[in-house]
Structure formats: C-alpha cells, structure tokens
Image (cartoon, rainbow, N blue to C red; front, side, top):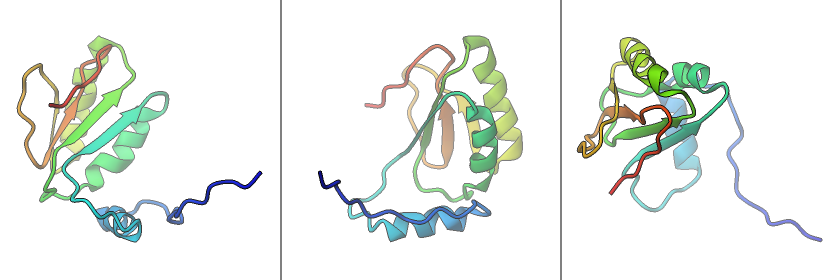
Length: 115
C-alpha cells in the first residue's frame, strides 16, 4: 500500500533561533504564524531549556507551553526558563491576555485553551 508523502525539512541541531526560522521558511508556510504552541512530557524540561533561550527577543508572537508536570513544579520551571531567556517566561493564569514575545506555561495538572 503506498504511503502518503509529506514534505519534510532535514533535522539539524538547534544552535540559534535562525535555524528555526530557516526550517519554517523551508516548509513554505502560507498563513501568517500567530502563535507558537509546544506540548511536552517526559524530557520536556530539558528540551525547553534547549529551545526557549534561543528564541529571539523580538519574537512577534506569543508562545504557549503545556508541560506534563505536577502543579507544584510549573512555577519553578517558568522561573528557571525566565532566567535563561531574553523573553519573559511565566506560569499562565486564567483569563490572561497573550502578548507577543511572552512565553506562557500552563499550570501543572491543567491544560491551556486560547480564545
């Protein structure tokens, strides 16, 4: 049975934010990007430490993250990422307005809904 072919971009190790932009451009995304959403579980905190600090200070969209983690740890994760990033990283709050260049981590044990 034939498999569906998808255009993919070869993986290269992330060394700076420009790598993300080049990969996104290579995908030929037609619609404007309005938000970046990241969902992670096991290994997520380490992956976030390797990605979030490379996002540029002038990022024109908000970033939302759902990390499978107990409620008592997501605030500390947000604070740790905030210390390592040029962007402001916070634990999200109900009813909060999303702003470009900000990173919001869903509180532990909860999901995130953007309206």
